[in-house]
Amino acid sequence: MDQGNPRIALVTGANRGIGREIAYQLALKGLKVLIGCRDEDKGRHIVDDLRQEGLAVELQVVDVNDTESVRKMAESVKNQYGRLDILVNNAGVLLDHGVSVLDIEENVIKETFETNYFGALRMIQATVPLMKENRYGRIVNLSSGLGAFEVLKGLLKLKGSSPAYRISKTMLNALTCLVAQDVAEMGIKVNAACPGRVQTDMGRATASKSVVEGVPAPVTVAEGADTAVWLATLDEEGPNGGFFRDRKPANW
Ligand SMILES: NC(=O)c1ccc[n+]([C@@H]2O[C@H](COP(=O)([O-])OP(=O)(O)OC[C@H]3O[C@@H](n4cnc5c(N)ncnc54)[C@H](OP(=O)(O)O)[C@@H]3O)[C@@H](O)[C@H]2O)c1
Image 1 (cartoon, rainbow, N blue to C red):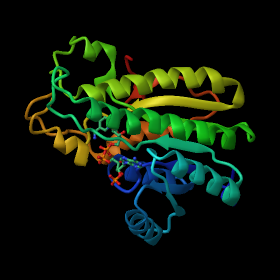
Image 2: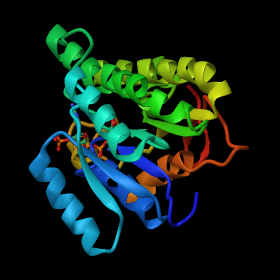
Image 3: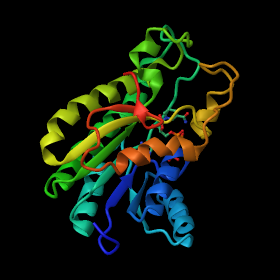
């Protein structure tokens, strides 16, 4: 791919936080970036901002919770570009901060899984066909070390809050492993990234009653986006089916 025919990347939840920064960093590398956003007005605002910096970005409305919205996204990308090269499954929610697994309400678990797990699955199922014809694809799932078994088992002495969020990320990690096996022969790589505790709306919301009580999120958005951007632009020799933090393998 060259300047005249850049790679096309789609980032979900790109209107704020880590997603916006991933989109920005990918666009700075010369990619055409589709700003995935469930709210058209919010997305339009970001697109205007990034275009003012001379970056090649387009709005792509997509609500990952909505099967019809995801189908329309895939149709629109196929009609406009004929392919997709990179998918970053960044959209996520944390609805149960400070809640114990003994008290969590079933609807909160379902709502969390709907976005953090099923949303990513829907996006992968809809976009792999747009990658495999071209025999090139990079998929990055924004996960969390909070979903890793060594943390869930309490080995790191973190409090047992946010059960829906954490299990949704464990499921996302499992999905990463399974998808990796099925796309390996298609020139596609899928990996999961933990950004660390990042200074976003989500990261800040965890500072008050945090799993690391009272400690503000230490990681800047630029640092938090870095591993995902690296995985989104891996060369042929890069890993498939891994979990990474700070560009290094992380424990599942
Ligand atoms: N921040 C951290 O410390 C941290 C740590 C580990 C992992 N992560 C993961 O990194 C990712 C980004 O986190 P963040 O801190 O940037 O979160 P954030 O600031 O809360 O932003 C979340 C983004 O996801 C979007 N979103 C939520 N539900 C959506 C849906 N159904 N369809 C489309 N977009 C949707 C939001 O859109 P709206 O503006 O429309 O709500 C927003 O753009 C998440 O997957 C998160 O779990 C974050």
